Image (cartoon, rainbow, N blue to C red):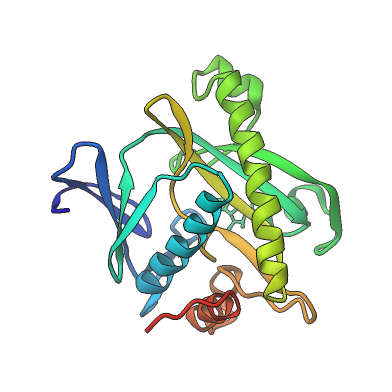
Length: 237
Ligand code: C5P
């Protein structure tokens, strides 16, 4: 697999074409951003840690029957993925209240959400990723009702798999964001799953082990990501 021209550089990852028209190369950079890019920093080792973390999780999901775009690791900071037509809708599931939900509704952080909530956001940096719903997505052509229904069902299947996986490592999966695309007519999980795009708390102490450490200036960001990985049996060196 040969890496070719840069297709797109996002806030934390760059996407390259490859010698296979059906495959792309994702490069996980050390760049870290929050608050719509207003807070930015390069955190040493983050690209490598998130690349390996994502590969581990995507393989677990694939093994559980959830189609993902992940194909294989290419280097410490790169992996090969299927080239998909991305759907510009972010799916968020919450098991415990935190972040945007607490800010929006004024509920107490950490309360259990039963059943877990499901929210949709438009993937659009300029507009600040506004919250949307099925009706808006259909009307504006961001996703069809059939696609949204499959995305919702897959997002909850991911919850079943990952809630238990993290619990086995002594962690609570508080919430997470997923993105999907279409590959050969099928809805497939895309983007990444790493502590950048989810909230993970220690099950006993509720210590934050995810990107909130960066957002809230708590320090020890990459150390926490590596700790999460180690608890799941990953090695990073
Ligand atoms: O900010 P909010 O509480 O709505 O985020 C919910 C979950 O989705 C968090 O785990 C957050 O890290 C993730 N998220 C993300 N990218 C976004 C928005 C949210 O990874 N653009």
